[in-house]
Length: 206
Ligand SMILES: [Mg+2]
Image 1 (cartoon, rainbow, N blue to C red):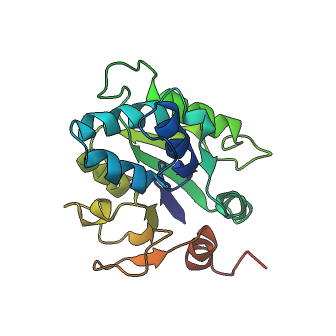
Image 2: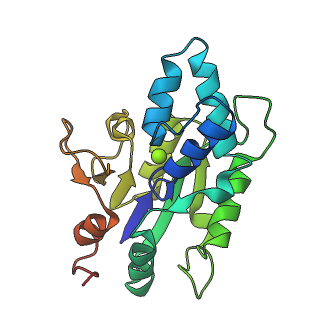
């Protein structure tokens, strides 16, 4: 069995980081809350799209090391390793941010984060380095998921699952912590424990 996973906002969690950056950059006096709240409030401002892109360039670049693993990811990846389930990671991530102010190689930053969390170590999650793929566009990402012949794909964005070319044989698992329903045919999971129950035959959590 082969399981495909998205990276940003699926494995790596940024809410606290966007919250901190919103205040540090003096865009807000106090934290507006989650990543989504920061985004929505910034976009409502003049030049808001630029301000939002600039914060993203910081979070996914020079500050990415501060991202956290979502609760339950570590247990899920350990269970995959123990059960010999192959894990591939497919991320839509350009090498450099659209905001030219930041020169960090965002793909390398993501890989460094994964190394730091034990993704590739034999005593960690034992994922093969060559199983991490970066795509320049959503179209390319979906093509990669198809070529990799994943049994499941887990992503936080519905747009990935409705992109033309998404393979029919790959089961769609939407990771959406705050969401209660969806209008597209996916398995909605709000916690990685639920994802483990769906993908790994017997529940791995007590
Ligand atoms: Mg994502």
